[in-house]
Amino acid sequence: MRIKAIFLTIFVCVFVTGCASSPEKYQTIVSKHGSTIQPTQEKLSNYSNYNLSPLKTSETLDADTAKHEHAMVLEKKLSTDIQALFSEWGKAGNASNRTLVVEPELVSLRIISGVARFWAGAYAGYSHIKLKLTIKDADTNAIIGSTVISKEANAGAWSTGVSDAQLVDYIVEVSEQYLRNNY
View 1: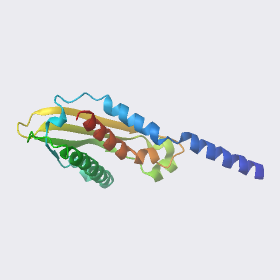
View 2: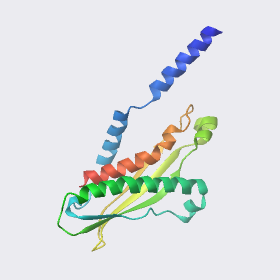
View 3: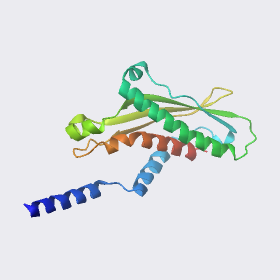
View 4: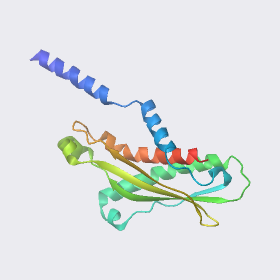
């Protein structure tokens, strides 16, 4: 019996370690995804002022409490990360006096909870987020870039929802990478 317990412990440790993704691999995936998106019509460095609009959501999404909470987490992280990027760009000292507006819109969202993932595994279904970014010139209202960033989390059978929970981070980081690539 003791040998079975030791074997099981070793198996679980190897399995969990083997399934973990390294931060380097994650960043490579984010960079690759951000680089494959169609570039903006104009370099973002041609602007000196940058604004991020509040996250647009649908009434259907807002009516679902769990989805609304995840949307608010996404909006907060998006605001924090993108505003930091805009501050960095503002220090560059571009004298164009033009303003760029980034308008995020949450097209769809479904995040399986860790509890549901633990008990139902793959049967709980897939988590996904689809975010549309529209980039406009504030003075002319001309759209200089528009893209949809989406990601689906694997429905792992032996998971506590880690990949589901990381979807928000992934979407924000790809959005930031896309903006950086077009600066």
